[in-house]
Image 1 (cartoon, helix red, strand yellow):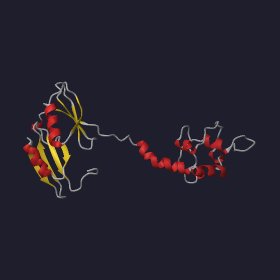
Image 2: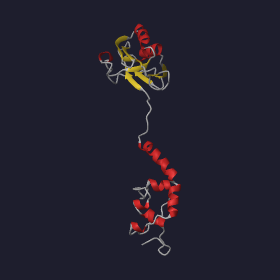
Image 3: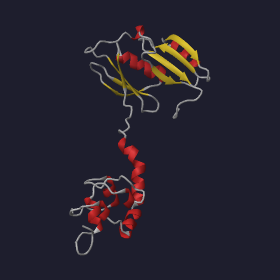
Amino acid sequence: MKPSAKSGVNARDFWVGADVAPASRFDGLTALSWSKGSRWRKICGWKPQPRKAVRSFSAMPFTYELRAQAFKRLPRLAAWCVMAPARLRPPRMKFEHFALNVPDARAMSRWYVEHLGFVVVRRREDVPYTHFLADDSGRVVVELYSNPAAAIPDYAAGHPLVMHIALFSPDAGAVAHRLERAGAKPFSDEKLSDGSRLVFLRDPWGVPLQLCQRAQPFPGF
C-alpha cells in the first residue's frame, strides 16, 4: 500500500510506523531509529501518529516537505550530538573531605592551624572530637577525629608512600625547616629532573606530610 489521498496514509505515517529508516531515503542520516521513544524523533519534534499497516519500505517516499522539515531541525540534532558524550558520562564529583582517625584530634588540629595555616570550619567538643580543617582555598578539607570505635593506625610505622597529606609550597626547604622546629620529623628530600622538589616529613603524631615545590604547579596554585 502506497501513501496517497485514496489510501488515507500519508508519508509521515509511514515514517513513524517504520522502525529504522532506509539509508536511501535518509540522504546520509542513516541508522537512526524511529521506534517508539527514539531520541531522533523527539529532537525533530514529530509527534506520534496513529500507526498504519506498512507492507514495504520501498513505499515510503521521502517527500520534499519532509526533507525540508528534517533539515530545518538539524541544528537541534547537532546540539544534541555535541552534548551526548556529557549526558552519557557519570556526573562529576567534588572532593568533600579526607578523614583520619588520630590519637589526639584536638591537639593535632591546633598544630595544623598554627603551623600549616589551616582553618577549623566545623568541630565537635565531645567524643570523637571531630575537627574539619580547610586549606586557604576553603575547598579542600581534612577531617581529624579520635574515635574509639575503630583502631587508630600506627602512622609512624607506615611508609609515606602508602598515605600522606601533600601541601603546595613555593619554597619546600624553608617550610620544612620551620615545621621541624615545630616538632615535625624529616623523612626524605627528593629533587626531580624537571626541577621540582618533594620533601617528606612526619607531624608530631607520625602522620606523613609532603611539601610539593613543583616546577609546573597544578592549575589553581
